[in-house]
Length: 156
Figure 1 (cartoon, one colour):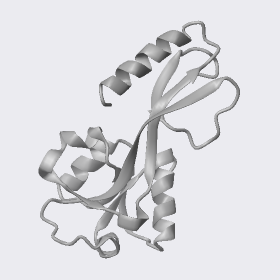
Figure 2: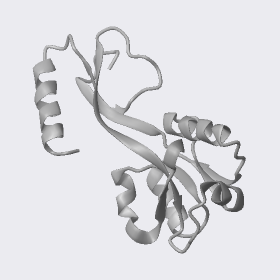
Figure 3: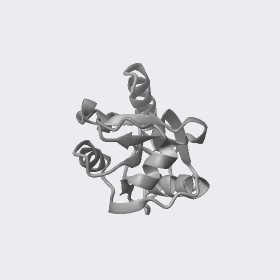
Figure 4: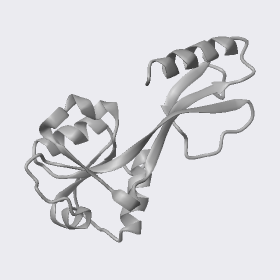
């Protein structure tokens, strides 16, 4: 975006402030949830984080750094078994009973369906924001508006 190679991009909101001619349009917020294997009966987040292998959302990613801050606030040091970035891969590992994870509730997890269970984090819930970043001095900026309107109309 900053090199004007793209007109716009649908992304996770960056952790740094946007400067210059870049504009952000928020599309949705995805709450983070604890995902556990489908047979797990407990909903006690602290107990689960202390007693299951933890499949970590890659901490160098923005979402992974949000998870790290959550764990620090909860004073949890889970037993880590894997650290990776693709949300779908983490969901599949959890669905196969290899551990638990904290991930954003995103459509990407719908491919796994009922093979895992989501537990809300209650008062500890945090979010990642999905939206459109665009350069407002682009001569094709009106097309970005049309793209935005289509996204909003589609309920994305």
